[in-house]
Image (cartoon, rainbow, N blue to C red):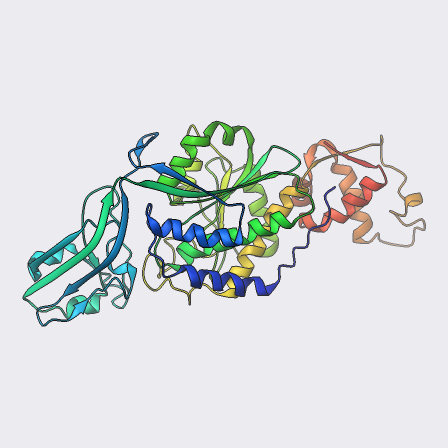
Length: 435
């Protein structure tokens, strides 16, 4: 059996993760561009093993083509009375992501089709994108929009769309087996907290923890990619290897607030990743919300698509699209908290630890072994048998060479990690073998 893993994640990890999110928050990320590179450069300070890959614009990846690379330096509007508003320097959400360059003067009526607000959240700035159709626009609070006066507006967006590349980060950690656990998170949203930065920072801490383990049963493949197009690019380059090796995977996003817990299954719904996610959430946070694959919206769309069919699930706090701050300026560094990040990290640690320790078990005796002489059952019949001895008996009863520890734990309605010491003891007594 593997060495015991300390799952009592230090609450200080939450503080450190929040500090990293704070450092990354101002960067204007998109599906391509220097914001992604800058983000990966900072993450490499925590994960020196992280390698950066550049895939040229125009490259066909299945049904998609990598678009021109987008970068932006500045943007603003000047009102008829000379005020500068919707300033990119104040919030990178003020500009529609992937806006083409523009420098012109328009009337308010001509400008309105290029302005985006949230009437039901009048103080929030929306996050809007136009990756694959040339467009420019500004995002502002609805209150500010209502204050605009008729007249001529100077609009200025200093951006570029030129041949470049799509950038992603990859980190491969070998284990004792070639079978892999796949961890994927995205780095393409600008200044958003739960929907963007919680995923990369928690994934970074998971990778550091995995690297610190004295032994790993599985190999681990960790990717930091732009959402959707990045997953498609990665699959186009590694699909056959992923299909051969990946036994479980997690799309890591929206893992940093404190409001609740969510689980989104794979398309199949019964993979090893599904089973372990449900098991961990059931024992740690039993009031979690269970969504359907019909509720998908992130990279599980790609990883679980027909012809790919990877066993990838999402364990989240507040699910994307299901909390009011989603894709707005309200999804900031106050929405994610050190406690929320720490608990998200801890839940995913438990999922990975359960996978590491999950084996098909088989007894080595015909019939029930003599447990009393091994100190595994009382030798005096004095009353009800306590839970330790009952669990020993139950483990042996279900260790039929076909049933794994995760299924046994579900049958016993106990967390897998509580049974690990018993399995170790039975292995030492040579009453169990792992298949």
